[in-house]
Image 1 (cartoon, rainbow, N blue to C red):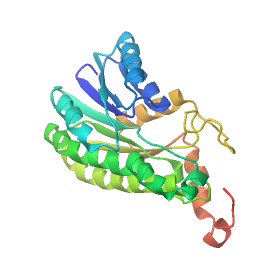
Image 2: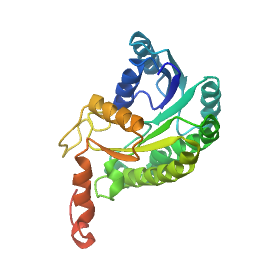
Image 3: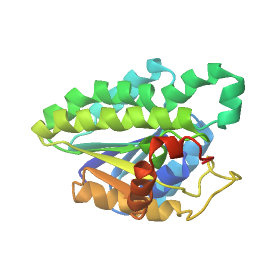
Length: 246
């Protein structure tokens, strides 16, 4: 792993932090990108202590395309295999969005349009190097629109579709794209939300993510049993589903 570099977008999230720590233990290089500079600096120090060849904090905001070029330039300066994991996202309560539809643009930017634009800019570099992985963190919420979070779910569904097309494109040059659909994970986005069950630890999801990248899986649910839960939810007929309060 010493010749591998990982760009971690949204590196302050609990899942990203756990993934960065696991990668650090292998000696990989880490470009930790996000909005919270102070937190990123702490994560970078922690990762260096855990064995990362490189752990550097870099400003990144999915809503500000002006910050993409410096990160891309920094990534280009690293030799060897280049990888990227996208953890950026936001999930305001649906009730807040219903009261202020202006929030929709931010949800789309954080979960879909910002990451997609960055990955599109990065894609030629990955194709030129002929290898590496793209890990995109989606959500089970993107599998079917639900009353409780359908704007967030719509953004993740769009990201899932984008990743599918990117997988089709980059696979031709040896780059693999993994779509990860977590269920409920113990993160800042889920703290205090009602109706939580089968909540997974970020460390468990991080292990599943890296295993999927290593085995070149296409789409995974994390934990795995969410595949079957979402299969049942998708099979509920629409006349019944639209009456459910989930």
